Image 1 (cartoon, rainbow, N blue to C red):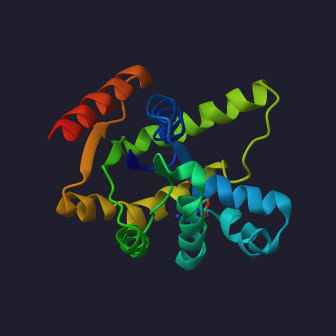
Image 2: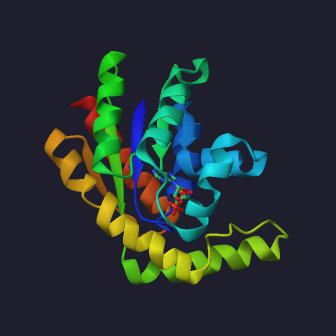
Length: 197
Ligand code: ADP
């Protein structure tokens, strides 16, 4: 199974990714996690992207495309993958298409979690409070003003991917405002239908 999960910050991509990974025995590929790991490791990529990420802006397309290409070629991804946070621009989506085509692979579906923008800020604030309560580290970009920038970037750069994948026929829109289990069940139903078709 090869999937893309689309949705703004706070849409619940992390939760649904975990569940899909367990169900289909596929690997989660999150460019956000890869970039945060690079920043923590203070390697060359990390040094380049640290400030961009903390402003809530997007890092250059070439950089994430090459990270994803490497991850897709890794043996762990043989059984499939779920891309979370990639592609994030039409350019990245086109690069992904080429990359998959070169390898004779195809996306099974692009799941779009549709959420009400007004709810996002509240959701992330809740997530931050929960992390703090558990004594976990809080992402430096989970701050209200940076979050607004991330949502604005999503609207401008990433939301157009919905049309892009509508045209390729891969899009599966899901109402992300429902409880997590309901969202999971709907994704499952839509995927079953897709696989059967
Ligand atoms: P979010 O919770 O906002 O969806 P992510 O964890 O996916 O956040 O990404 C965090 C940050 O990493 C982004 O705000 C951006 O700076 C950078 N980033 C992640 N993925 C990409 C990408 N595909 N293209 C460009 N920048 C990215």
